[in-house]
Image (tube, rainbow, N blue to C red; front, side):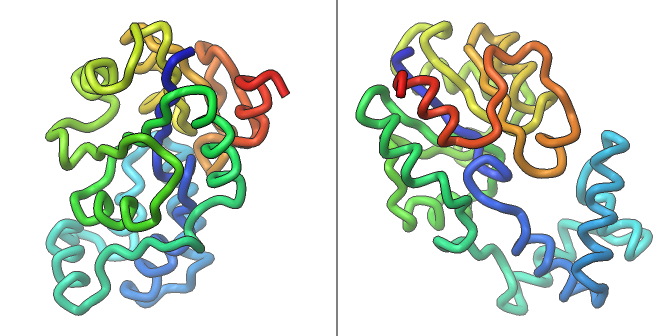
Amino acid sequence: MRSVVFDIGETLTSDTRYWADWARWLGVPAHTMSALVGGVLAQGRDNADAIRIIRPGVDVAAEWRARQAAGQGDQLDESDLYPDVRPALSRLREAVWVGIAGNQNAAVSGLLRDLALPADAIATSAEWGIAKPSPEFFAKVIAWAPGAPHEILYVGDHPANDIAPARAAGLRAAHLRRGPIGLTTAAPDADWTVNSLTELADLLTGQ
């Protein structure tokens, strides 16, 4: 393995604050918001459908712009990282090239870089102009990360968005059982399934 590339949401960062902020904006309890997000994800629907259930007919993009105008846009800091992220990425970076690439908007790109994570490069779908699970996203990963496709490992929580398209592109793939999708949806085509990034680092470094 020459490169390991990580998804972002529910792989490196928790979505807890993201949905709690939406709950406050929409005027519902955080538990209600979380339950609705889990429900729509379990049905294979877009997670933004949770917002549409609370406010039928809403233009989610327009609502997001209203939040930004009110100073309630994207937030990301150390508290949003899962505890195993820095130690695992640091260990892996001693052995392989480490990249971070996922579906995020342009604002999150800057916030991620501000965290100074132990990674060689960071990219987002907004910067590349293409999002997962599109094959073009994984073609970008192959062009970006060192190594042939079979020497690049993509790590993510979402079987449909991360694991299946990565494998279809010829990459290796590790399914992280984290977050509502990662914990409830199997990824039988993954090369490895792990319960934490610590476990992944142990596996790849032979420790």
